[in-house]
Amino acid sequence: MLYTKEYIQKMIGDLPPLVAVAKGLIPPEALTRTQQLKPGDVDALIDAIVDQSTFLQKITVQKLQELKVDVNVLDIEPRQMVRVPQGKVPADEQLAGIENIGKQYDCKDQQLFFSLKLDVLRNNQNNPKLEGEIENKFSITVGNDILDLAWNGDETSDDPFLKLNNGWLKLAEKYSTEKVGRRTHKVTVAANANLKTTCNELVLAIPDKYAEISTFIFGRKTKLRLIKELGIDASSERYFTGKLEEILGYPVTISTYMPDGAVAFTPITNLAWGVNTNIDMFREFSGRKRAIEYTFDCSMDFEIAINDAFAWATVKEETAGAGAGG
Image 1 (cartoon, rainbow, N blue to C red):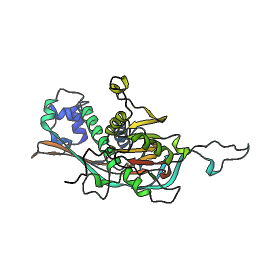
Image 2 (tube, rainbow, N blue to C red; image 1 turned 30 degrees about the horizontal axis):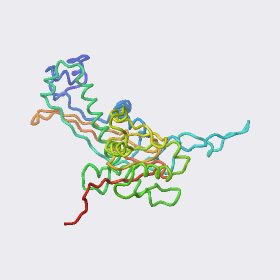
Image 3 (tube, one colour; image 1 turned 60 degrees about the vertical axis):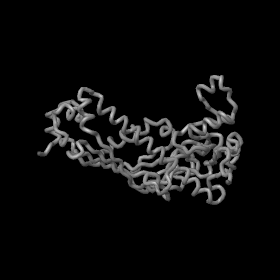
Image 4 (tube, rainbow, N blue to C red; image 1 turned 180 degrees about the vertical axis):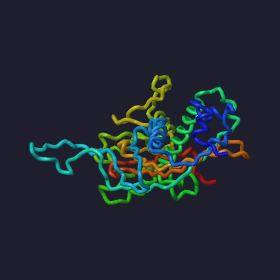
């Protein structure tokens, strides 16, 4: 039987389709659909993913029409004010705003598969918020994967997930060999190096014009190491709240999936994520699995907008006795 939109609408009215299936008003086969998401749906999907992550909300996110697109970021160069005499127009180099800084996204395809078991639907047939809850969990899952890939992605990895894209740290390593003024700044430190000293070296590594608008970025375990290193008293409120808002007067941002011991110093908008807006969605019912299966086919890439504005170091923590022979 062909389940047209008109038929489904007649059968369920304003009821969400998944709830209608849960209540038995329409069969699960009626939800089978293959389509390229409409522009409004794509925007809503990307916005929902970003809204679930405080970190993604701070970086540069670009919605791309093509697979290979110039990286355009909100100009983070300082000293943008100029004087233009009356009757004259500003020259191109005097214009601030969105700028192409010579990088290009190279979006690679990747798929996300997930299944929704019929038992889940049946157990939620009286839950009018079911679709919203599923969409919310989907957005959180995708957002977490994006951040994981953004920091740990490595196209040379044997891990099928990590090899999907090069993440920011891998890109920083790649760009560290560019010529002076166009390279990222890798600060090399010894194992168990002092994190406080490392942060100071990161600030000194990049030009002042970028340092003044930069933030320290590291993971939760690194934050705990730094709190211990700072000697924050265990009885203090700061110890219990775990707040670490500034180092050397520069803000601190915690990013969950950043590798332990890695510390970056950069304007946070210097980190860019580009996602192609041609997203295909497949939804079909599997009788054998007794589940509704979803497939999202999309393409994305990550970039560091301005190499000279990115510094990082990795401080490895070695346990006592590590490396001892026997």
